[in-house]
Length: 128
Image (cartoon, rainbow, N blue to C red; front, side, top):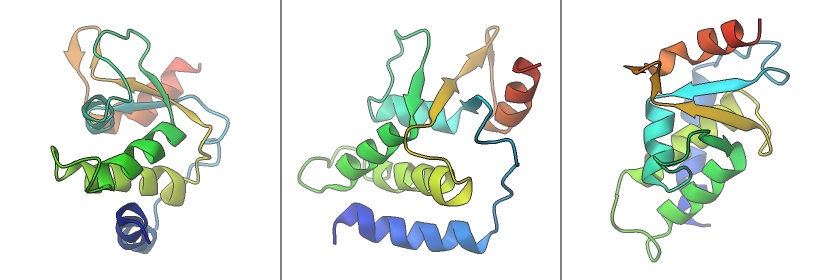
């Protein structure tokens, strides 16, 4: 079993134990993710600071977590494996998102730093 799979199993148990609320419309809505998700995507080279759209699929986080958890491929950011694995587990095991689901990642909105907790609210307002 790979380091990612080992880490994922531990994290998945924690995520499932906390009974993440899954909004009924989550599969059909645009998903906006802020702060922590954006920062980890940047750290893992999923997105670039120069990219104005900052779109990423859940699969991109899965692929990045596998790389970050491989001790041969990654030794620069020791916590990136755990952070990315948590994100993957939350998105897939917690919210039930499919790997092909696209996420909109944001650090700032209209020049103001955004908290990750605003993600759902922003998505609902944006879709109206």
